[in-house]
Length: 328
Image (cartoon, rainbow, N blue to C red):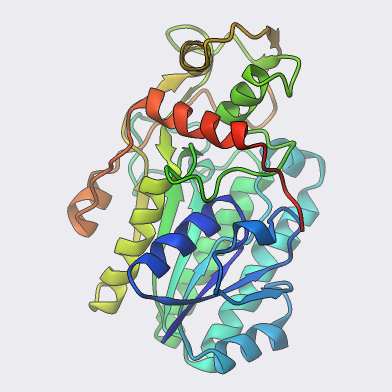
């Protein structure tokens, strides 16, 4: 049987695809290549160029390839963009997810792993935040993901689906083997931006907000290596196939790192003292988001391998030095 990976030509989706084929899974990728790249899809893995919002296309893929599980990454993910154009986020993230679930129900697919986000928590009332804490997103991006989570839960109750929702904190780094990494040239992820500045591909790094209630005034985030995140997806698939109940898991290390700490580490690892500029807060950015990931560790027997910040940055920097950018 085959796993459908939507958004499998993107940063995280391609890393998960490599993880799946490394353990003998058959995989088919669906990606519209708006931000993904053919070059990131492993050789031999079928790539269908299209949208998760195309119900008939998705059903055709599920039937033709004998798909029995879906890992759903395809989405728009930039918080400031969602503030400027919320309807496009609800269309691409929420409505298209609804269509994908409909196709799964129509073709008898019972297992779905959904790529969600810590943005569903908004300004968390406590830190680290647990999966049962209130969900009060500050951005349309977070809201679009939370709506998708609710749809998936309701569909599971009515149609016999079982799911795992993985709420990512800040994903960073690159494949240690150099096969895949963050390839969108204008990506807004801090570690990628800092590595690009170190390589001279950006003139500076802008720090958005220095007056947060944090030790150094800059935002605190929980950075997780993309390879460790990929292992969480593989473990979630094994869990569901083994009869596990539908669950939601935070994906992070339980450690907060400030924006300035990341910048200092990037300068240290790269050996480059790149320019830094300070600006106002961005709308939709919480002060701190740190994961309580004890449920993930206990239930899926997940143990991270690359939790050291310098290692995460070193892998990201190695990817940037390869000079690979998105090419459809």
